Image (cartoon, rainbow, N blue to C red; front, side, top):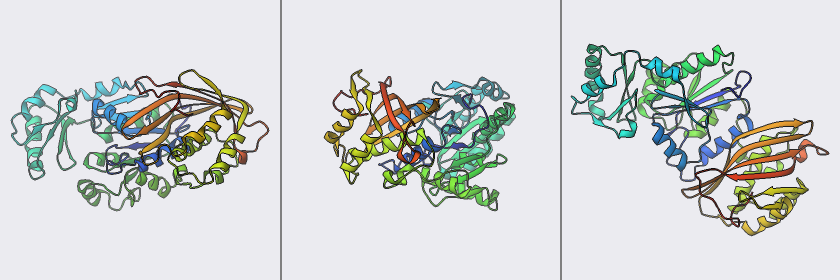
Length: 425
């Protein structure tokens, strides 16, 4: 949160499974559309928050499987854990708050008395969360009886049923909604309360998000019955909460447009990127557009290939240099000529490219440094590199695009490293 000097223009707080991430979309197109929109138009002055029922272990596993962006804040384990940034630094104040009237040992003792409850995997048992499976028909009775027993033991707890099978026991002060309220207060105290907040969800444990004052809410098209029922009983006439007509991340984009929270056209929805002329210089958009072209090129989705390559060469300085992650240097013009060798080489291979954490900084009147992570995924394998690009607006108009002067990449630790011959840009 410290990277922003003032109030975020928009804070998106989104559930992951079946909200931001569509597990029924093998091409991951919905989330990739959101990624392109966020990095081009929002990352520099807004906050992205993932709010998930997953534990840190399962959250990190999902990041390796899907083309996900890096959030500014991660809320995990159904609102019982809040962490910040790439390093996922825990919020110690939140930990202290949740410790009130909570005893994990008593919760374990009482839940063990219910034969209807089946404990979830060990990774899902957290300091402030006990998680079980329960049959839908038995859930309400179990929740009522368990709640009474825990109150009698001196605890103040919250029991959340979601997904038609998941039952979580949390401290009363926990939950996705309470975590969001805590963040709002923390941002307000720092003088950085978001100008707008959009909460996004699909299941029962997301309902709390929509109860926080002044929050816009979207239930994605594929929202589960339990969330739709909550909405019908509690917020049917609330104009700030909508049921999207689009699934998952596409529904989030729809909500941005519906509530007029900012730009809602993703670069992935622009068929001919060469027609997307700007009236001002926008380094983040230029980066997103270039790597989207690169993906389409390798998937054999680019028409008028020679024209595109010519245009690409025109926005690269003749003296520009590309430093490959292996350390080998080549001229940018040589690299563009080399693109001819990889045209269509990833066709029908579920190949995708996306950029993450695109941060431009202007270093003088006509020069920017743009830093970001560039990712490629073929099937289930991901490769990533840290990328720094230097671009210039000298002697060009915004409609012509910035001139690329230098591109430098280094491998991201822990990812598969391509050879010099099959990694381009």
